Image 1 (cartoon, one colour):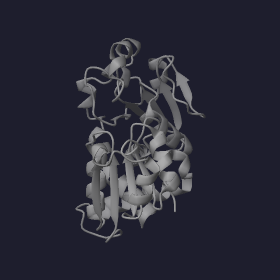
Image 2 (spheres, rainbow, N blue to C red):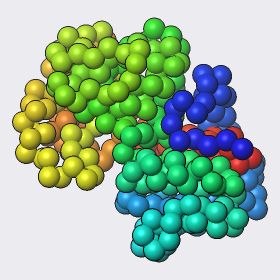
Image 3 (tube, rainbow, N blue to C red):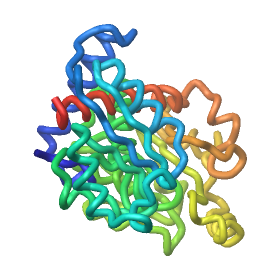
Image 4 (cartoon, rainbow, N blue to C red):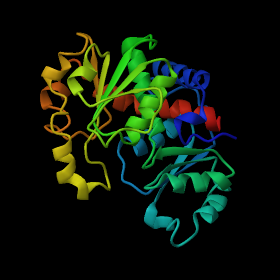
Length: 291
């Protein structure tokens, strides 16, 4: 049994296998009618945070693979308050074949996985967002094919999305640069940190950004908006990258803050390819762990 809590849980060969599986299912099963790889299986989905792409992609993915998903909100089970996390894990994992958890704290997912009898997938935590990273790299592969030597520049907060994306891109042979203000660096080795955003994006193949204020950071809004002044991805910044560079955002986007409306809607934007690829990436992860 294998969990997927963070990028370190798989090696490069395993990730390439997942990406190839996602591309195959996307190409051959574009309308959701094909191999029922998970027929008769059930996925438990514990969500402590609201979600659009993560929830829908996992639910639809399980349906297309012949399985079923059970959506469980925080208040439904009171995990960690009404009942200990370990007890919920030991009960739920006797009912289902796998569990996705979208949690406020990564410790919650780790504690659950430690006693779970079935694979556990991190659907987002405060530290990591590995499923998003797989969909993002799938998108880069589709548009750039060869990853070796490609330059991916993340502009913004070194948050959970940034950490997982930087780790995966580095693992698969990309040059990774994170452009952020001092104090917002991601704890990732093997990458370059740059406070000069214009220097960072020079000759980039990929420019990626995310919101400056994530869920749970609302009290820091004023400070963050000040600290990130000058880190907006606008057309002047995009022009410093390669002419065929793509622009990415994991959504939801705050247009006019981390990215301009012009860039978001430009031909270089592949934002909605990313969003679609959450479905295909999720299906490949599910097949690997539950198949």
